[in-house]
Length: 68
Image (cartoon, rainbow, N blue to C red; front, side):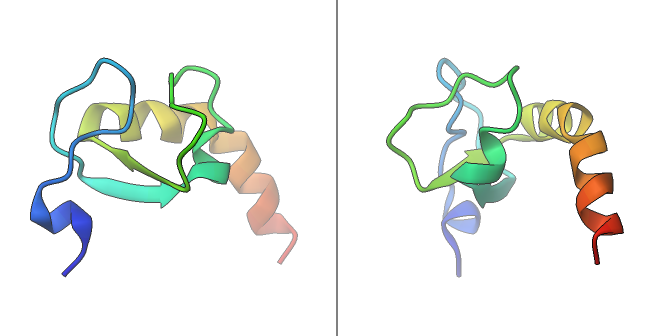
């Protein structure tokens, strides 16, 4: 049972929604739209912020997939 299923809050500063996904902090910092604390190792994102992260990093993720 992970932290998301236990009800951890979204890591974005100013958001109090429950997290729906977790991603590494390194990947979370690729998005310039999200305001995240600098001392995290894992980022927990609510549904709305995960959607923003996906839109911001779409090109980067496609390039990473092509390298396989």
